[in-house]
Amino acid sequence: MILHSEQPNFERLADWLKESRYTMVLTGAGMSTESGVPDFRSKNGWWQNIDPRTVAAVAALQENYPLFHEFYSRRIKGLEQVKPHQGHYVLSDWQRRGLIQTLATQNVDGLHQHAGSLDVFELHGSIHSVRCHDCEAPAEKTDFLQGIPCRYCSGPLRPDVVLFGEMLPEDVWNAALAAVSRAELLLVIGTSLQVYPVNQLPALTLGRVAILNAEPTEMDSLFDLAIHGQAGNLLQAIDQVLSM
Ligand code: BV8
Image (tube, rainbow, N blue to C red; front, side, top):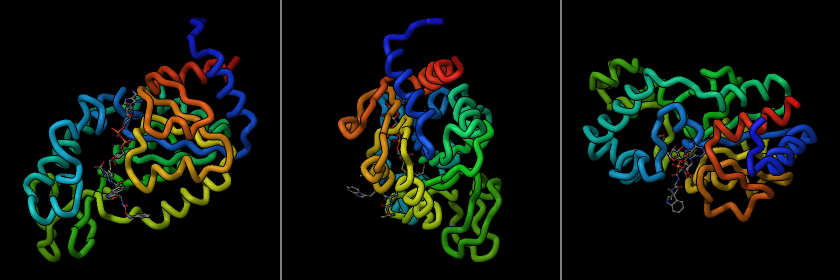
């Protein structure tokens, strides 16, 4: 077995996972990059050439629908061939083994569900369903991709994601707050923790908080344990310790 320089930290986190009676996992775009989905704020992320507030926002939808439509159509098409990576499967296996109780994600790509995770809290919604922005009627993804307006009120179609300035889905947000208030361990994976209110969850955790991330975040000092590296590799290494 390859002894990784972080081995002592893997063993520490594996102990915490076994000791914790209620563990919550919170993931971000860094959980999907090893599946080929660009994240938002790394050097080759989505936002490098566009500011999120100019495109993932209600103002963009209302004032520059072609830009909004182009950005989300590109992302929907980009996801068609994308598959979960080993790290997604480790998390769904941990859920099955009772090592984690709640999985919340800021990702809208559905990869956790694709890898078998159940009851995933999609805090920022899902790109895989579409609705009318005006009358809220559900619509076909193909209508959105073809630029066809709402068949009921001719309003603009949009994916069921949470745009900047929009409230998070109340039931999902309240469930995430309830979960974090009882979590003995919150494991954060692949997020820069720059987006509110999701970035408040680590501070609201009464139990231990750990983060797996490619690079340090501004909130690293909040964590009891921070391990830097690729999520897929780290999760497999920790899973190896758990299986010993
Ligand atoms: C709200 C749409 C009220 C879906 C997204 C001024 C100051 C503070 C806050 C605000 C402000 N002005 C406005 C606000 C509020 C605003 C906000 O936070 N703005 C920030 C940017 C300043 N928030 C909102 O508007 C939210 N709504 O506040 O309503 C409210 C109040 C109370 C309760 C409820 C509601 C709505 C936020 C949702 C916005 N929608 N996207 C989509 O298109 O995807 S945000 C967008 O960023 C994505 O959803 C994404 O998930 C999210 C977070 O980004 P990350 O997931 O963290 O991704 P990022 O690239 O940043 O980081 C990836 C990390 O992974 C990096 O650190 C990288 O190093 C690492 N990594 C990369 N690869 C790997 C890896 N790590 C490990 N392994 C790897 N392989």
